[in-house]
Each structure stands twice: as C-alpha cells, then as structure tokens.
Image 1 (cartoon, helix red, strand yellow):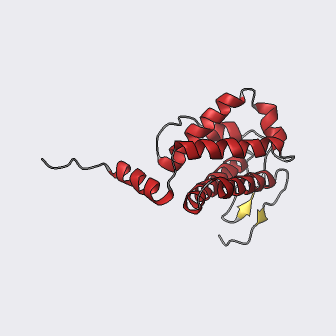
Image 2: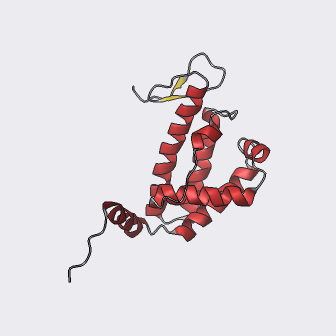
Image 3: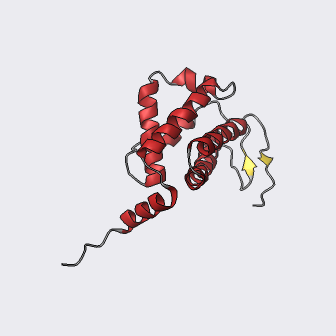
Length: 160
C-alpha cells in the first residue's frame, strides 16, 4: 500500500523542525526568558507592565503566537496590530524589543533556531512599526523608522 503524501504545510513544518530543532518546549523557554527581560527593561518594561494584568495568560498567548510563527501550528488567533497601534511606542521601542529578543534567542536556542526566530522577529517588528506609524497617519518608506511627534521619519540607510 502506498504511503500517503504529506501536505505542503506538513512538509514545510517538518523541514523547519529538521533544520532548527524548534519544538513547543523551546518556544516556551524562549518566550518566558524573553518576557522576564522585557519586564525588567527600563524602556519597554513599563509599557508592558501598565497594560498586562494577567501575565500567565499573556505568556500562554505569546507561546501560541510564536508557535504559529515559528512552526506554522495555527495555534494563535489574534490581531496583534489592534493591540499595538495605539501604544505609546516608536522606533527606539521596536529596536529595544528586537535587541532583547535576539539576545534571548541566541542564549536559549541553538544557532539555527535562533536565526529562524530572529528573522521572523525582524519581520514582525517592521510590520508592527509600519502599522503603528500608519495609525498615527505617518507613512514609512523602506529603511525609515517611526518617531512619534517628528515631522520627518528618520532614514536608517536603506534605499527605497
């Protein structure tokens, strides 16, 4: 009897796991270690602390989010842009979030997994930053970063 063919999604997931060894336990360790750092960070910690009342629920939601991102599990069903758009955040906050996430991924995960997470984190940060800028009626061009209250966004040296 022929072996059933796996779907393209199943193939993609299997390839990710084979190349990175990412699993739910690794995601949980990364998310929890990252948010421990976030909570004590002087720049972004207060923003999270002012808005998150139930950290256990938030961490569970973030584990589901990163499972969906890193493993295409489909566990997360939320709308992150709606949560982030009205926040008092701009480029320095996104840069700090990325730095903390990258440092944590490099410490918690093997190199291939850390690279996988960091690539996705960079894409997520850029998308959210653009969305937050748009919420404030600012249009970011490629390579620009969003600075609240500035008439002109700052160019990061990437051509449009």
